[in-house]
Length: 455
Image (tube, rainbow, N blue to C red; front, side):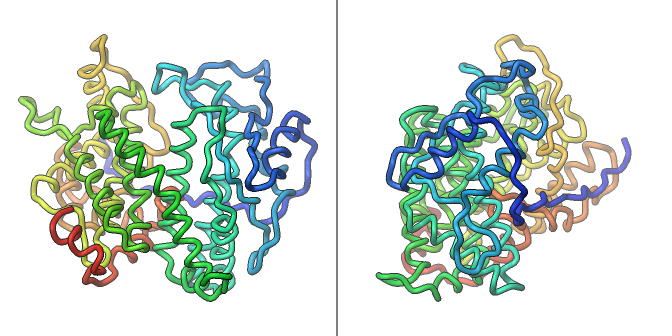
């Protein structure tokens, strides 16, 4: 096998210029017009932009892109641009805040890997504006260190949505769980970006409001959004459903726990982190079966994808929790589990058959399933940077495991691989997140007991 090379992560292009309008279907316009122009307190009709499936699209597939005609999603983006509202400091307007969120299933009913295009399309065109909003807040936040204008823009974008109590209601139609997932991912990315870029928070503190500052309202909004996320964490724990979605919820509440100095949220995030590492298989008769996340091994040909995707919020919690002298990663046993979890993701990237073998172990039919190399899998090496920022020794252990597995000398990857990576649901730029994690302690008094006593 050839020596692994550092990937070249590419930041997706940002949409900051108003696009020229294009003619699109009236069914799209009708549904979204209701959603975007309704008063923020009203019930929003977050229906599919085009409820009728195009004849060229098959209902079931294993690739999301198969569910859309060429340029369909670009048409949606261009159409939604005309509803932007002007806010101070921004060269573009902000997408109008939506109080009610309504999502739909991504996968076929009863499946966790076969995509149902009929519901995915409704989900995409009903909530795609959330991805756009998150993307633009993160992008402006990333530019804030060098641009006071960008800092003000990001602060005003957040304040506009906070003032409208955006994302605080669920629609009556659609899939409640999927709607809650969408809110959780968006909250995590927005709050992490706000935490990681102090220039944005300073800009918000300079915006006076009736009862204080924009920062007060933004933090209050984040705290309100954590309520349903926190409740869902408890529900899923009772159901023994500690999967990747739970890890993302644990990460979603962590930045707010720091900024609001909320000990209960901090303790809950820590419990999710602990439970995630408890899921990692250890002590098997065959050591080759150690290091995997069993619930993600039930995902068929996307199990490698989900082992990698689940590793992201766990690593991010381990890193971000180090801020202010805290830190969730405590015991040698936890370090071993975290090391093996990430090692298996990278080893699976190199030789997917090791995950295919695990799928056979956890499936009812006992058959190995060839793994898809999604973009998440291809970019798995970027997580090396997070591991190094948590602890250089963690990086060295993971890289040594990978070197032994593929028969190459260490280091296979430099610790800097992934330093230019960015993921909106984590809050954007990995370097900014790592810098935030290095803020000096001691922990704020309300958080001290959680940080020092292991939650």
